[in-house]
Length: 324
Image (cartoon, rainbow, N blue to C red; front, side, top):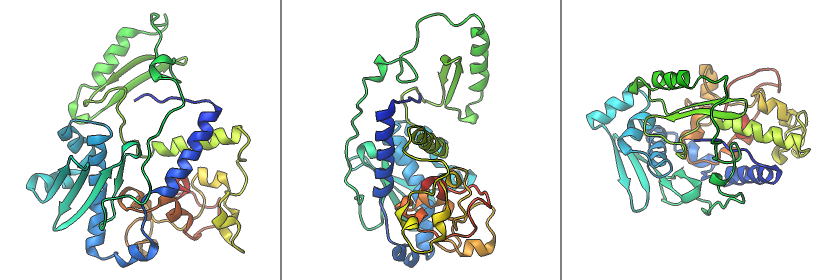
């Protein structure tokens, strides 16, 4: 999948879209999650991620279902073993575009909602709490615009300092082992794509799960907004929940602190102590992973967390900061 850049209006629109999506993601209240922190609810969290990834593989990426299942859904030997033993099952409702994962009598579902992609559902409903809408691009077709704005590539021969045969050899080596599950290979030389190839059933227009590449996209959007003069790197994060509450220590958190994950928000994840895990939103469950497995408003979830450290004193890899 190729990445496209945009002009100022596109960036402004993209930033607005990000804010809208963050605010309107399906959510449940604090009291609901706390009340559901029993074993079935925790088991549901472990099933929601596979259901969502399978849903995306089928209806967003339109991949071969078995390929998507083994390459993107069953992450780790335990899930593979559970599935092949029949302990973990998936029900696919093609009519409503819902995938339901079930294990030990507990189920979790995700549903495809057009341009909003697949969304983890709350157990009591098959609908999101936002109104799905079609996303209409204001740009010309990608085929008509040169890369990187579009997909059009030059017809001229490769530059003299590029060894095409060596690039072919690199591609063959890169995709030589199917067990590596590699999807894409691309080489850019002086602003021009000089080699592009795909494996595992992927192609240039296929949307694949991006995982934490979203952090780089968020940082790029913020950087562009700073360049355009809408934000300043060292200003306090412009969040009303933090800035307008009397004596809220989070008012000291700056945009720069969020970008380099040093906000100091209380947010458990890798490396957390048992005491920190006990203070998680769902005790014992890492806060860092809830955006992948819980039907919550991840923006509100992140900004609602209190401070554990003063900003710019401790750096930790935590989703709270880019989600904010």
